[in-house]
Structure formats: C-alpha cells, structure tokens
Length: 253
Ligand code: NI
Image 1: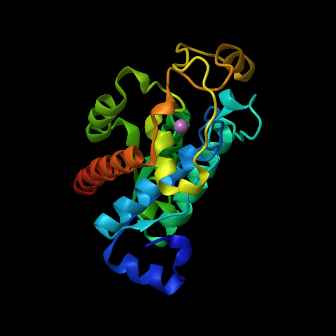
Image 2: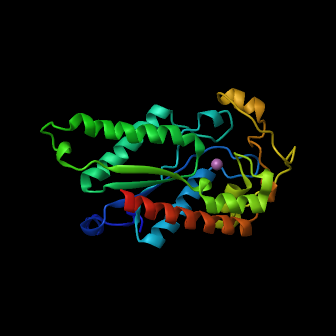
Image 3: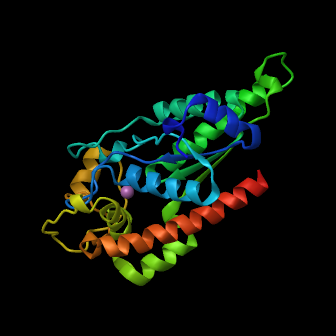
C-alpha cells in the first residue's frame, strides 16, 4: 500500500487500526561509470515496498534526494545540505504525526544520510520536549517514534554480499546495490570499462577532494561483478532482513 496511490478516506481507515508508516529514503548521486544515479533511492524504495507487502504496512513517498554533498562534483548528482534534509524530514514526520501516525520506520539506501536523519529525529523529539507541559495541541499528541534502518547493513545482506563479492563489495557503487537496480530495471543495465577493476578505498572530505581521490566515483568496489540475478538474491535478503527489523521496531515502539 503506497500513500501516494491511496485516497484520504483509505488513509483515514488505515489509521483506525494502524499507526506505522515505512519511509524510503535514498539519494540522487553518481554511482560510478555503470551504476544508476538513482541507485540509493531506487534500492530503498524497492526494499520498502517489499517490507510493506510482507507486513501490510503503508509506504510513504520516497525521499529521493539526500545528503550527497561529497558527490556534487559529478554531473547529475543532486544534494540537499544537511540542514535542508533535517528540516524536510521534520516536516514530513510532523505532518503525518498530526494525522495519527506514530511509528516511522525509515529504510535508508545511502550512508551519507545517516547523520542528518538521526539529527532530524532528535529535532522532532526536541519539539515535543519543549512543548511538554505547555497547553499546545502538540503536547496532547503522543510523540512519534522514529528509527533508521540501513538495508545494506542487515546480517542477511552482509553474509550474502560476502559470499557473492568477497572483498570486492567496497563502500560506494557496490556490486550489491548496482545489481539490485539492474534486477528491477533490466532495460537500464550499463556497461563500461572499469579502470582499475577494483576502485581505490580510503577517506575523503568535500566534493572536489572526493573526485580527485576517486576519479570514476567508486570507492573500494568492483561493480563489474553485478548481475540482475545476483541483484534478485540481494533484494530478497534485504527484504527479509528489513522485514525482521521492522517487526522488532513495531514491538519495541
Ligand atoms: Ni549507493
């Protein structure tokens, strides 16, 4: 069930028995010479839809532009600054919270979002803490409960990617994420000469520094190992892992 494909009476009916919403969050940024620019948003969205189907939970609109400042020197990358992303998430959660949603399970496709998303959660909680005791409408509503789950970090995915790609998974433009998008969008499988086949790894600072250290955009990865078939395996593992994490969150929250 997707929020943007529903009507308001359907959402009103959903809220009579449920208070959970799954929020896919990704990024629109370069993913090396063969990875789609939308990779992080596409993977987060497909995993969120799988978890939503498994658990009959509403999936909100995908936040498909994230905090990708370090990718900004590559054509096509789009970034929000951290403060914009924090404000965006606050408005997203607070609006739905006013309608009665209480548990927000963010499924994330991009490491660069982590700090800002967690900061956003505390900005939201701070608003409630400040309102506590005040005679405002907000103080009468229960605080929302938010959690961020990174699909690539669940045990199921880590085990499988080790098995399939070993030390060639890397940390950006990974064969796992590239394969997942190729599984879902086989008409957009790309090919390019990767030189060197295994990209360099290491730290980086701003956008210009990133591009000078990682000239083709990849970090530590060899996405030539990606295939749509392996993408289906990674997708299934991610949906299984995130379904488990969602159920644990629902019980704890
Ligand atoms: Ni990515």
